Image (tube, rainbow, N blue to C red; front, side, top):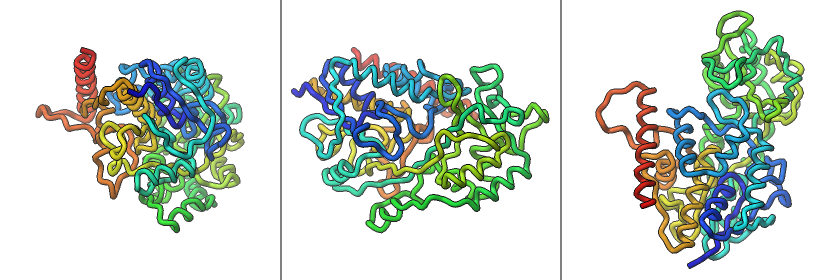
Length: 450
């Protein structure tokens, strides 16, 4: 019986996994290569650093991410508790101060007596019980090792970061504070909104479509060497703003720039389109441009985004950028328990499995931690009911069609359908899924604890 677990990767999944193992009395060696070896997206040496967005998704209990949030809160997630402690206003979403969140996670890991944190790159999978949570920016050496042990090519896609701007540089005589449909924690509104009329929107689209992009050299090299990619190399849930615009001139107005639920106080009417900015840190001096992941050159970001009303003189703290995300072909190599089918003492967790979204990474890390601790104590891993969002995610990535496998966020479409014959509208169906998840998880945990 092994009394030590090795965790590779100190991101969201790895940090949560290490904590869950340690809380069950098993010693953990947690490897994190940063800051000795940095990635193309991270900026600090903190564990669990958020790079793409500062939002963990909707808090609303009848939303898919809200269901998953409720589940992992019930399962006593460390990272969710820190996220809720370090939350910043974001309407119905749970958004955090990035630095405070990552610092809080790092402090908890550093002071956990059963966890030994080692700052070095791992290039070989060691013997024993191992959780691989190396994330979407897995180093080349470890990626080659994973290819060797799985016998599979790595899929990949390009992910993109939204720009972050200085709050004082936003023109509030043009912009206005509001949350969609008045849902917010701050009375005047959690978001800063930059409204556009039709003429302004069309001029913006023209500039965006004609802007210069940074060549995806890594993508070109990958294609030439035969590494497989999803359609267009991008993950559909995190498309660059310019790629969305290429799909049709109105696509942004019906996407990240949709104006529904917002009224411009200057006109008393709904804008034609709107660009929203969300608070990025607790003191509120930084905001990120929501949904504006991009691969435009820095010069073009200055030029094009200054056409947005209220952002004419905006100061960028971080420009948008692209980075490569790596994930395994999970349906070919993983069991529903997230164990590697050829060596069940290896458990995968986080975005490298094909589970997308911060909350999904935390949830699979929690699950991997539970499973690894059980293995260390001589028990088999448990399988959560498929009627829970966590159970559905794990079932999806282990049962999807391997040839067309793409990363998946929490959503009701992957859950078993409601089979009671009741006719419901969309909102009622969502609530029914949430109720079923809560009830079935409670029954499962009662049985498990007994």
